[in-house]
Length: 145
Length: 287
Image 1 (tube, rainbow over the protein chains, first blue to last red):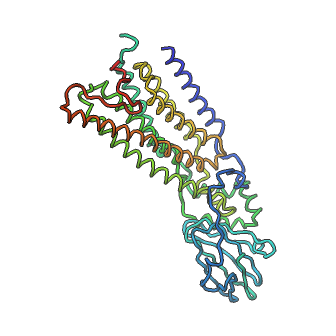
Image 2: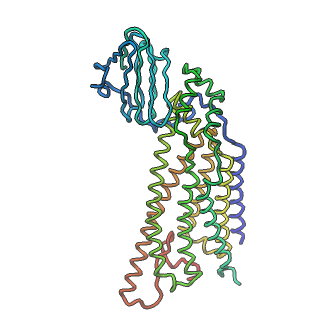
Image 3: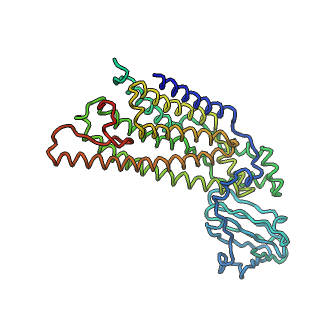
C-alpha cells in the first residue's frame, strides 16, 4: 500500500505542474512581429520555392522574365501552388501589384518594396494564387528576379 | 480479504476513470469557445505588435483590414486534446481486455478478447494514421501562414492566434488526473497490476503524452499555441500508431493461439498472451 501512496503523490505533483503551467502562462504574450524568430526550428518545416521563369513562360504579358503591361491595362498571372515566394521588381512605369488566392484575402504590395535595387520577396501562402498587375501610368515593365 | 485479493470495485473505477478521460478528450471541442471572427480581426489589427509589423513592411492598415475581411473564416483547429482520445481509447481497450477475464471469467471472454484486440488495434491504427496526416497538414499550413509576413502573419493571428489556453489547461489537467488516478486505482484493486510492465508502460505513455500536450500549450506565447497544439496532436498520433500496431500484433498472436487450441480439441482453459504484457502467466488472478 506504501507504493500506492507514493505513486498517488507523484501523480498529484504532475497534475499540479500542469495546472501551474496553465495558470501562469495565459495566452496572448510574446511578439509576433518577428515570425521567423518566434517559431525557431519549426520554421525549417516549410519548404521554400521561388517562382521561376519556367512558371510564367507562355503566360499573357510575359516575355521571358519580363512582364509588360500596357498603360491602363491589367495582367493576371496564375502562380503555381508549390511556390512560396515571388520576387519581382518594377523597371519602368507606375503599377499596382496584388496577389490574391482562394482562402485568404489579397495582399497589396507597396511599390516601395518593388524597387530593382533591393526587391523584397512576396510570400505566397494561398491555393490558386494569382499575380495581378495594373499599369497606372507610363510604360509598365516588371522583371522576375 | 488479503493484500493480493482482487478488489473489483476499484478495478471498475479504474476502467471508469479511463472512459471518462476518453469522453473528456472527445468532448473538448464543446467546452472550448473561440471569439467570433470579426472580434478576432479587430483584436489582431489593434495588437501593437501587428501595428509594428505593418509599419515594418510598409503596409497600409486599410489594406490589411481589406485582406482580413476577404479571408475565409476558420477557427483554431484544436487537435491536441482530441488526439489524446486515441491513446486513452487504446488504454481503455487494453484495460478491458485485461480486466474482462477477471470480472466475467476466462471461459466467457477467452475467445472474444483476441478478436476485440485485433479489431480495436486495426481501428486505432487507421485512426492514428489519419490523425497524424491531418495534424501534419494543419501544422505545415499554420507555420507557412505565420512565416509569410506581413499578410500571412496577420491572417494567421486572426484565424488561429486566439487559441484558448485556459480551458485547454483545465482539460489536460483533468485528463492527466484521471489517467494517473487509474494507475492508483489499479494498484488498490490489486498490486500485481503494477507488475504488468506493458500495461504500466502504456499508462505512462498516455500520461506523458497528456503532460507534453499541456506543456506545449502552456510554454509558448498564446498566439503560437495553435501551432504547438497541432505538433502535440502529431506526436500523440504517431506514438499511438506504434502502440496500436503492437496491440494488433499481440491480438493476432492471441487469436492464432485460440484457433490452434480449438483445432486441438479445445480441452481445458484457453490461454492467450496479455495485451501489453505478452504472457498470460502474469495475470493477477492466475498467481
